[in-house]
Length: 122
Image (cartoon, rainbow, N blue to C red; front, side, top):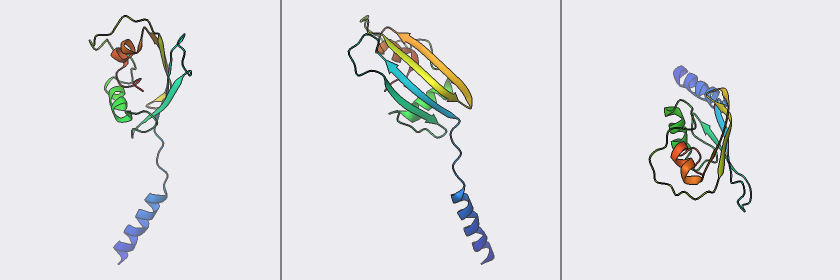
């Protein structure tokens, strides 16, 4: 009975301890300058565990983890049109507890996805 009571109390204490907030929390934004749009699109991405408004949070977090937190990589080889429709990608927040700021402009969405993978695919 004593062990059962100890287990119940330990479980209750664990349930009362708040979850540790993710040390990887990012605000990702996309802006299409010069395009008639409703403005900037933005989502949150939290990792460890993956969460936030990003539609593919788990995959985006896995890609960031695999790249050591780099948002941009060499082009992935996909074929993109030469249509000029600039897009500015930004990331602000923390990655593994360290402040990050990323900003890059690409010729169009396809060129951006080729260089950033799932992170800015929203």
